[in-house]
Image (cartoon, rainbow over all chains, first blue to last red; front, top):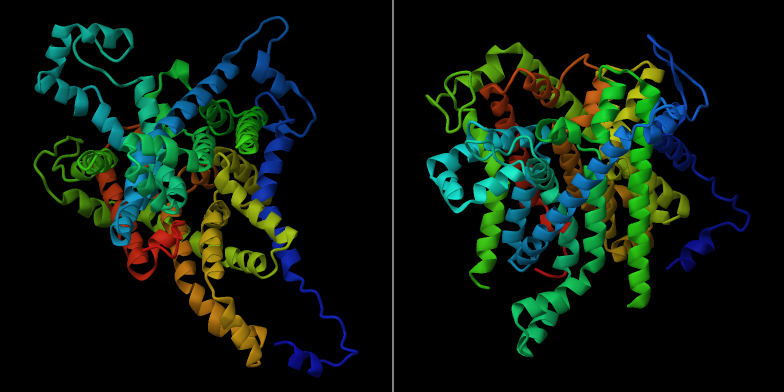
Length: 321
Length: 265
């Protein structure tokens, strides 16, 4: 194909000029997508000036404050570590819950005709695009103590039934009931439920490529050999989507680490997360940008650590397989 | 299993619709208190949102400027990266694509905090164009993915045929590459548009309370309790999303855009 063209090319043609735009583009992306992260890191070593803003510095005081409190060694506080613990706890439980429930849904969806799949995808994408603020608003109405589910429990007699069989006391022990009725706000259950809801459509979309590429003849072969649906799921489907499953859980986990609105509305103030503390420090009453930045860096490092561990786990398993 | 499957899908759809139904129904409340089910159903709150209350009208206007501006900018930035990646596959292009996708893949709060500092240094904090550029950087990953899928779907034989017939790189780009990737570019634009319309965290940091988008306005109003007018915003958003994604599904191959195998129907 190129022989004819090569003949036309003079032997002494100058080497083609290397275009400049790839370098300009690289610079632009570095400026827009990387510099903000570098700024967070740089400011995390800064120093807050009492009663004013902050100044550039190179102090580890913000990090020390995160792990042992500002008064260490005279006094130790693990408040910020505790917040990180809640960030991790909510994000882990909610991401696993989302992926575990999204997996069978996505599998069933990929077995439908293509047109039906497109319709489901439109529905999922529309719900995914709804802002966290709206979703929290919806769940807040549904779970609020005077309307929604608690009201429904009362009207239908479910609350009385729970009292009669003695489960109401158990719910009270779990902090899910007031003396009169069930109560979801504030609770860990409501927080995790809302967070899980937030990422559920993402979970489906992340699992969709792998499941839709799964060869149906494998499952059919297993079925003709006498395997039941659960055996097929356990021995054929699950092993082939193990990697996307771990990948999706990790991505959702990282995304959920930064959840703000759900935690503010549904979590008990004693169980607030690092994300809330970052807001407080950067935009809230505290106005301590360097400490907020240090917390953001720690959140980012935590996310990176989990992603790295996830990758290690998957490559190890791949090696064994 | 024949019953359990559809039942599970139906239950999932119900669970997913639950808060949406509640919020949407609440918009019909005749009074200013949020009741569910709605009391004295009326469309008065719609008039408030779109016509009579300037706070919401302005917020909607800001949301639209930011969403359209940032989605357009994200596509303009994503195109050369995707093209570079597809045509050369060089290490640098892969790195740039990965760096461009980073803000979307990492906790948005960290990027939001970083952008707050970034615009404060550049003097753009609280300006609407800072919001547009920030959202474009956040959602760059979306058109990058869809345009890359579009470029990969081009049959190399078409390019070879064009080259044999003497077409220059520019002509090939205009007559083959661009038309074939147009639906994918449009999809990328719409994905970025819809998500940017609803984005909260980054806008919270870069708007610095100077102006509100609808999502920010709702968050600010939450302190004083819910009003049915807020619910109208939710209905507007979900309607826009449904229309946009239905259009993408109608004129494009949505399952393929989402990663389904092209060969299977």
